Length: 78
Image 1 (tube, rainbow, N blue to C red):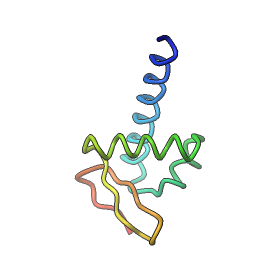
Image 2 (image 1 turned 60 degrees about the vertical axis):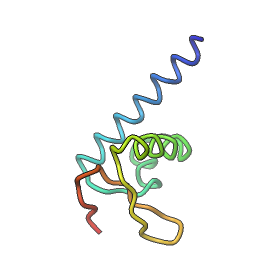
Image 3 (image 1 turned 90 degrees about the vertical axis):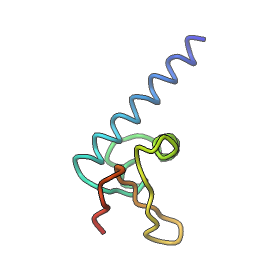
Image 4 (image 1 turned 60 degrees about the horizontal axis):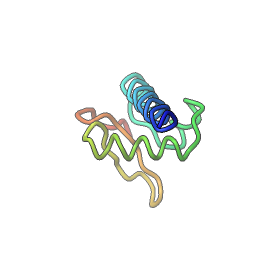
């Protein structure tokens, strides 16, 4: 049980850090978010998925297999 609680806290921490970075720097790709934060690509992808499903971020296709992540209500700077 303790492990699950730690995982949840870690996930929330990643979510907060990504949101803060996106608000500060504007739209970013998942790859850039991972490089900028030091988190694994998979951790960033899961966080973006959670944030997208909760309506906090949106995704815009920039290449066939790449998306720009932005805070909802803030237009991506393309």
